[in-house]
Amino acid sequence: MKNEKNLNKKGSALPIAIIVGILIISMSAILISTITNEVYIRKGTEERVKAKYIAEAGIENGIYLYNLKVKNNESIKENFSHRDSVGDLGNYYLEYNPPLENSNIAIFYSTGITKDNKSIKMQAKLDTSNGRILSWDELK
Image (cartoon, rainbow, N blue to C red; front, side, top):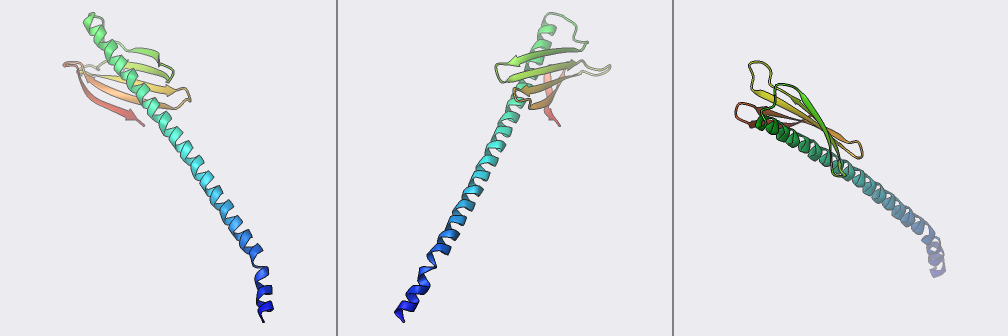
């Protein structure tokens, strides 16, 4: 009787080993997939943040150029644009639109572009009568 029970147990090790192996391989594949996705998400978020900071640097530079023109009594009633780089992070393109007739609101647009070509466009509105920034927004 004991010999019959031992014979039945001998063949159970292989199927258990195969099932455990399949489970380990499946868990490893899921882990690798999750890590890969997290890396892509982090990289995309990092590039988006860089592009936003670059665009903000462009607007700040535009406001500086605007104030410089006011200080030097140069015309601020005409559009101007400016391109520049922000270290090795990327470049920005700035556009200034002067106030329309019967308005005191000038608009600065800046597009920040990273080295990986991720871009974000921002807009700032400036009240030219008192120099206050009215809004500073990311454009969709």
